[in-house]
Length: 442
Image 1 (tube, rainbow, N blue to C red):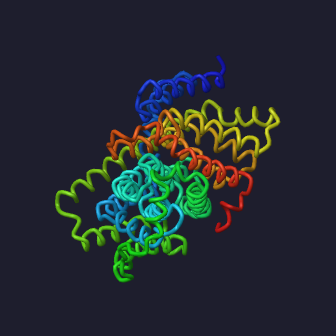
Image 2: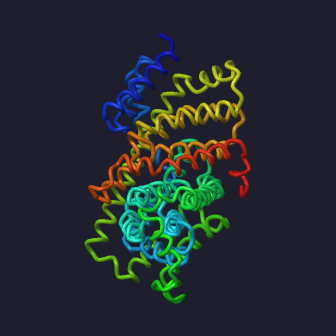
């Protein structure tokens, strides 16, 4: 059996192990070790490369961004900033078409700029937005679908853990990836807003339980009003944190790691100022930060080991030769790759897809002249769509489990997220066809 055939067999084995339920880190370690052993016929080399990878895989100062941004996101979640952001958005937008749906997207957009995790957004806004939308006459399934659909903004609008992981795997600037995600993230948010307003206008029965009552409630001028001072007090903490972190990062004053440190400290001050952090909650936040960060760093070590095995097998260069021999243009390869990611998103989680595919595909994209920043945004958008597609659809299941209502079935939420998927596919197509959407601020 040739080295190339062994490499392909090992990829098939890796996907099979993950689908059978093995944790992705263990699958990556095991397949990479077996691959090096078989290809070089030297088990000692496998152990030596594993030893080197464990240290060098995460020794860089840059990797401190992961626990710092995770800590910042968890502290913000504890501080009820998401609830306050939604309440202000509700007050400002409630008289628009599908006002509360638009408010959910707006709040998710702001919240995404300080958390970077879609699941956190889904859990927070399920508790905040769905009851309020239901009270105002929105269909419960539509309200849940709106929260699930807009929660994916957390993975695109920087800082995002997926952008950090992609930057590490593809060996590109994490700060550059953050900047590259701005325009696609905003396009996605604006697309969601336009789609919700059009649905409320043309298919109101999909949105509201009672269309006439919902319209009367929207036009009612006697509803409770929030004073400007109250709105400012609710928005000031999160806006200050966004300006501090992203302003310092994009101006070049902070490195990504320093931005994470400053953001975590700012989030701590907000939590303390709001008296939302006692000793027990602080311990829970630190414990969750450690658990999430260690699991991500372990995955990155495993991915680095897997990437070394692929290099030894010569798989990326061999696949690149096959792609070029097959007459694929850079754009053709980009679309084929996106389709593969979309299909994998139906059965695997986001991080697993990145860890399996990026070490193989990024060198091929680079050899075809595709900008790795653009390639990364295409990857993350395609992976995000997997958060909403059955049977995996982790954002949908997060919303369903957090909502815990017997009258809202999970398949109804999947149906309600379909318009969001269509918007994301449109943004994916735009990013693939127009690279300046990514490189505008670079």
